[in-house]
Image (cartoon, rainbow over all chains, first blue to last red; front, side, top):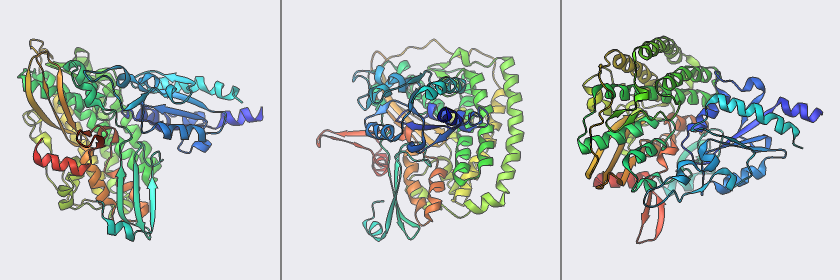
Amino acid sequence: MLKEISRKNAIHIMLVYTGGCNGCDIEIVNAVLSPFYDIEQYKVILTWNPREADILAVTGPVTKKMEPALKEIYAAIPEPKLVAAIGSCAINGGPYANLGGDLGSSDQIVGGVSKVIPVDANIPGCPPRPEDVLQAVVSVVPLLAKKR
Amino acid sequence: MADVDRKDRAEVEVPLGMVHSALLEPFRIRLFVDDEVVVDAEITYDTAHRGIERMMEGMPVQKGLILTERICGICSHIHIWNGTRMVERGLGIEVPQRAHHIRVIGNEMERLHSHLLYLGHAFEILGHETFSMRCFMFREPVQNMLFFLSGNRVHYTIPVIGGIRPRCDIDKDKKQTLLAMLKSLDEELKAFGNRVINDTLIVSRIKDIGYLSKEDAIKYGALGPNMRASGVNFDWRIKVPEYKDNFDFEVIVREGGTVLDRVACRLFECLESIKIIKQALETLPDEEPINVGYELGRMGYSTSYNEAARGEIYDSCSLDDLGRIQSYINRTPSMSSLSAMEVSCIGDHLTDATITIVSCDPCLTCTNRVTVVDENKDKEYILEPEDIRRLARRKI
């Protein structure tokens, strides 16, 4: 019980950008950091250290270059952990995996995040609005409290 | 940059990245340090390469141009505008003046939010949380304006070939609201700018670091505000007819070349942008915003240059008989600003390196598109800034 309460009171999100267009990335940082949609008031804190993270937020399609780095970061996060794929690129590769001309779609990306690491939550949008991110955080927190 | 002697002299190598708290985007900087002074710097940036130009080969041009917007999430409008402009120039499509005005409004709003993001990020790296938060607070009304104008906060997709999308048209009510939003932003930003430039704490921290001389700025191909902060007076907006013929504004040039000048240059450019948006809204002509009477077809090689928030942007492609894209080329400003960034780190303390890097406004997501496939050697490599300059001299 004590563990649950204390975990709920300091949720750390680690943001990893795996090669998207920066749009989702900045929207997340804006949602968490900026005083307008301040998530920090709900004790959700942005971190860059995988050892203290609870939620791994991944934006962008996973490029082949970032695949090992993402796996390493995922392994470094202690249990219990959740992974949120943010934006359409992170969910299914977006235009890079599904659009293409004569030469087909991009050969530089692996695809969505779920092809590399298990994903618990998807937040759709190109990019998702800050309100959606807030909503997602609110619905993900109980999941984290239940996990052991 | 690969100077063997200097690297040998270095005692310690400090790598930052791939994922590092000072850098929002994944890239690696290796700083070669000799007793706390950076003697050489090296940047590796091929993590976000997605092959957009390759994907666009053979795509219908309307579809392909929307994909250009996905190159970058910060300067998305300028990519699609420049691409559309290139096709319009190549095929001789007439565009109504109203559409030009609205495209300029989109670009200037984008410049505002990009510069404010830059300032917020720079102050955050400096450790001045209050100023950083205030910059993000200024940015939010600009994002709201863009949302109000186009219906999306990041990828607005305002231009189409022949004009603008009807949903982005500005009617009378929209105009009044935008002008009111702009007025309050203008006043607040002026007060904030005064506060920053006269703040002893901030100025003493960024005054003499990250020096990039005028010669180096030209030699290493710095662009945009980085170049203008080093005393080079050039801006594509004084050449592009959409800006030159209709709007009255100043090009901000500063002589210093330090981090302070780069910050101040962007701060003043924000005010100029507000000036341009106001003029565009007030002189908006009353006509249809889109010309639909055009035909797509074979187009020879066409190019277009424009001024993005970070500097010069260049697009070129040709179209086949069915109006499909052939060999699209897009060159973004961060590409050459990166080498300027390496140079300006050298000779400073290690603690100043991060703010110097941030002050050059790197945008890696734009930069990571250029991969060259050498068929003879049968290997792929990312184009380095030196190669770009070599190719630029050959005028590909």
